[in-house]
Image (tube, rainbow, N blue to C red; front, top):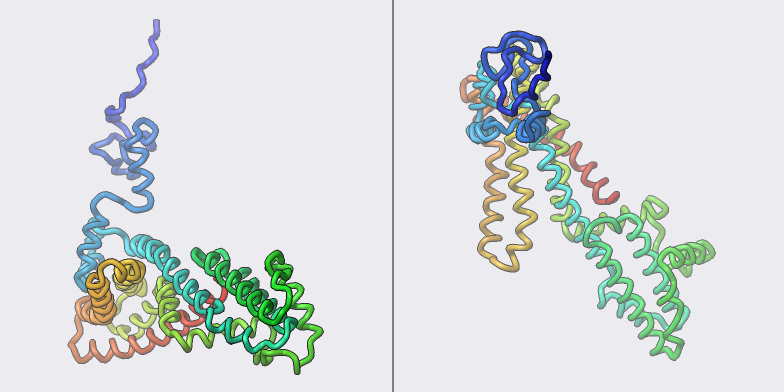
Length: 382
């Protein structure tokens, strides 16, 4: 009489690999590499496998980050064959890029929110504009044009956190200032502006501007043409008034730019160290670990940019300390790359400094050629 075999317990250790039937001598099969732990028998192993596939949370990530802080140590050891103790360079780069990109998105959104706040009509400007209007019709025209501009802004930036409340306050201020001026001129202050939707206002204003003559238009035609040209001109004016907005936007797109430039950085290393006989993929490893260090420093800089406004209103000394730390990290990045290049390639200081200067100038030019257009597009498209 046969009896059904009991189900395997959670702690049961198979004697042969379940994948290839090879006799086991430890927790991993020496033939195919499969682990003896089954994720379908133990919840802990299932959770561990999820993190293992992406992050490898087995101590290597912390050891890798620790050695990454020493210029050249991890790249030198990895190229020498000590690979099991570290996270693979591509995986480390992807992890840090994703984290930095996530934080950078908030930095770009804050920059756009600042630009929209500066672009919103201010109380003093509204009062001056409406005060110069001598008729009710002129006040209504200025009101509708201003509301149409805010409606256009809402279309392109309304999804950015913090922008919609600013636009709503600006629209309310426009209507209030217009109503006050209309009442002062003896007209009906309760016009359609209170009930007209932004979309309807924009359509009405567009039709009125089409029928208007150049002599009655208060705004000179844009040099580029159309709403796109007007928006570019307004952005240029705002950036001239506050260049820090664009600086933050460049920092926001820096993670993507660094990730794109890794292969080109490896090409430059290959050309300048051609006679060392290293394979291109070895230079790629150096580029990945060096850019991972840059990404880690950039992550800290961006995190500081996010917490500084909050600290400034609660602990000014802490905000100042964060600012100094950000500056120190930015200056440490090129020093880190120089020391890493010296340690990995082991050339004399004169040759290292010369090649570092050549690579630095070429790389800086490439970085700006990629980051500046991306930052401009981010500010326009968000």
